[in-house]
Length: 578
Image 1 (tube, rainbow, N blue to C red):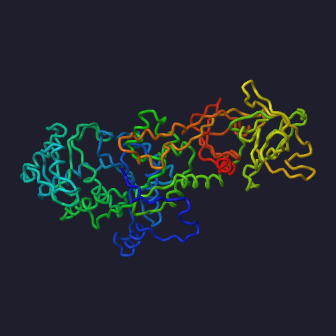
Image 2: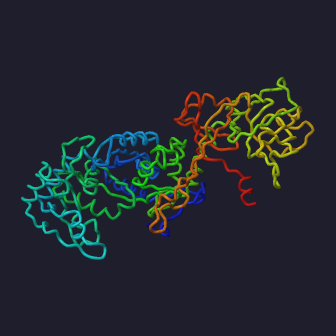
């Protein structure tokens, strides 16, 4: 369990927008290398995901850092799939990663795979064996763990550590040829079994694994470990700055050690790449572990990797988040040297800011309540013109029909209104957005006492929403004409986990018990007719309600909208305190 006292908590107000920007520590390193001409003026980064799952918001930060910094300094970025574990990897994930990176707004200079370098990785392993820097070990997994010791006790050398170079080379070639069963032997680096850094205690380089690889098929029976392959792949691609998350900080000495063993410079060009670690991103009310996200999918807690409650990039995309908002979030989070817990409200603020400027306005009634204007005839119906953007009159207008029978929000009526209530109530007046003023005269109820209809009268001289006699109407609510309304399914999403840190749980308690059972509410709503032709992925501001996007489940007969994020409701805050 992680100690959150060691994690910085990033709030939405942490840094004023007007504050001058200073270089982060990675930028300082890059600028120093450019100034010294260390890499002949080159900047080359890489984004190296393992194709064993879908990318999430934490990967989005890494994407923005790697691609963003390379772009800033005139460099390039490769995408490299770390496909060294065929048991967990699949083409499905490769395709999804490509799509996510493109959607985020980035393109890569080269597309590579660790499997591209399997022959060279193998040759370098033989080179290390021949130079007495690696040996074949017959210990089992549990025995290796025991021999390595722990943070408090030193390790002990494997009884096979002094195996001759010739024997190790012969066994390693037979491992490749498939003579031995899985787990029977491994290749280990020969470094220091008593090193204070556990990663340096004769780490594994290769293991036997008979598994079909999505690119190489059954060509290989042995596969390299990540710590061995990582730096070598970087060096082959002439990466200048290998940027990774903070959990790899203790692995950096091993990254450097493997590369430094090429003393004859037969395999890698100089200067060698430099590994730099930045703080991993954690988000409140969210889990980031691929393993746990996979459990949510497999156990049906969510509908799939692209469920709009998931922190995956495809889930955020389906919910309606924009790449601009995610990039803005990554920038505001910044680059730190210690792990941080960012507020989900910061991500929401970023998308709200983006959509405020770019999402057309529409009216939608989420929880419909019938409103009938008793003193209005069908002939008195008229057209109302409302802007697509309130702040952009140049954006044009859309037309709506104001009729005798309307729908309003249930929440916009109170039979016994509290103080400072300026919406509709018995005997009270309210302005219907852009149309007219109405007064509630009668409340119609069903046999159980539920309110089914409001009967109102309208002020015929208030077209446009202003009273001719100059009286002040404080409340304005939205509406949809029953004559024109279209039916739609609205999905209101909330945080998937109730706790701020879902992993901070009492010992023995299942982390899944913290799932918010109310994280999805489905409504049958009434929408203005201008939404009838909305297309998958389009985003709108439903006035006074929130931002919504058309979901892929939509059909010609029924539109489905996902709530991306709500609007701030000042009355809800007042009511909650009362």
